[in-house]
Image: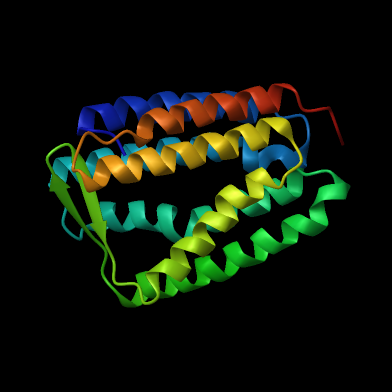
Length: 205
């Protein structure tokens, strides 16, 4: 998230543009899901711009934001890493992929039976959804997304994992203080790392 509707819109468009370049430069079909990650992050930012403009609540834009953030990302990231990883790393990456799938199923269920709401708090947006065992769900989410990047065996993906870890810690602290939201800056930096990774990937069938 960014600190205003305009910032979200501009950041989302820029991140999506980087994602389009990543997809255009892909030389192996197995790399496509991970290369398309900036496109997904850019769309996420643009959707949140709509959440800002509607003042939050429980509308379709809030639900669309939650679908990407909750059940989609914990599946997309670990399976994208698994597909792109060398054979030597694939066995260990099955663990975060399985955890991500289980986490996504749980989050999808709670999203389907519950209502997600958004609340504008100064320069941040807070999202609410009732989750039983929230610590377990968050742990599974982080292990699936960040853990898969750190276990990938690729130095650029490990760098991406470290960047996302730092971003999560800083953004969580800023959000708790209801300070300016900073995730869009980390999403932009992450997209640049993905572009660098794509450019260095070998060609393939």
